Image (cartoon, rainbow, N blue to C red; front, side):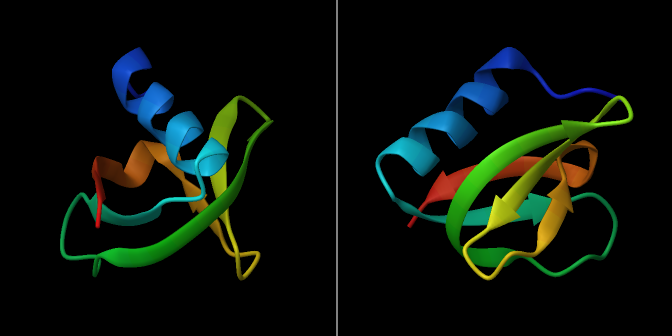
Length: 67
């Protein structure tokens, strides 16, 4: 499953502006709140890299909100 262009754009803006965000996920995975550092694509999957160098698969994200 891939994410919408609009959602991807929100990731890029949050990274460029160094905005603190909340990411919501499918299922019962807890929300992420923090800063994002980069976007990467590997083996056909897209990931966002957090400031603490954690990788989050964009397929799992349902929403991004600036906090």
